[in-house]
Image 1: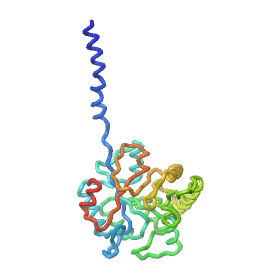
Image 2 (image 1 turned 180 degrees about the horizontal axis):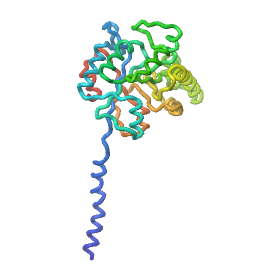
Image 3 (image 1 turned 60 degrees about the vertical axis):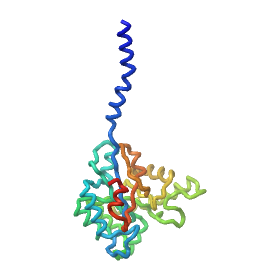
Image 4 (image 1 turned 90 degrees about the horizontal axis):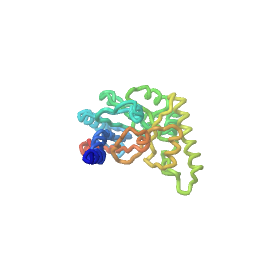
Length: 276
C-alpha cells in the first residue's frame, strides 16, 4: 500500500513536466509579416532617391517577392486573421504607398495587376482636395483627386488608407503627434477635427472610410492611438523598421512596423533586412 501511494504521488509530481513540453509544442509559431513602404514612382533616374523609386526597381521587387514565394495580403485579410476568421498565406507580405501620388496609376497599378498583387495607398486629405479643385496631371509631382481615388478604390489590387487631412507637415507639430505642453483635451479636439474632415471626404467621394491609418512621418503617441481606436481604426502603420510577429491578437495591428524602400539600395540587401 505504501508503495502504491508513493507511486501515485510521484506520478502527479512529474505530470507538469510531462505536459509542459506538450503544451509548448502545441503553441503556434508567430506569423512573420514584413511591410514595405514606397512613395513616389518616377522613370527619370535623376529624380530617384530615398523616397522615389523607378518603375524598374518596383517591378524587380515584385518579381523578387514572387520568386521567393511571398503573397501580398490586404488590410481586410489582416483584420480577419486577427479575429480568427481566416489564416494567412505561408509567406505573407504587405505593400504600402504613402501620400497618394498619381504616379501609382501610371507606373504602379499595371505592375500590381501583372503580378496579381495588392497595395495600400495612404491618402492626405488636404492634398486630394487641392487636386480636386484644380486638376494637374504632371506625373512627376501630381496627386490623386477624390474622383480619381473613387475609381481607384474599385480595383481589387488597391486599398485606401488615411494619412491625416492636414497633419502631414512639420510646421505646427510633428505629424499628428501631441506637442510639448499641449493639453490632452486640446490635442484630441484638434486631431478629431482633422480626422473628421478626411473621413467626410472619404464618405462623400469613395462611399466608405478606411479602417487603416498611416502616421505622417511615422510620428505617433499614446494620445493619437487613443483617438484613432475610438474612431474605429483597426490597423495603424508606423515607420519603425521592423518585421511584425503576429499571434492573432487585434491589438498587434495597432503598431505595425514598415521598411522604407529607397531606390539606391541593393535589392538583395534590402530584402535581407526584411528576413526575405
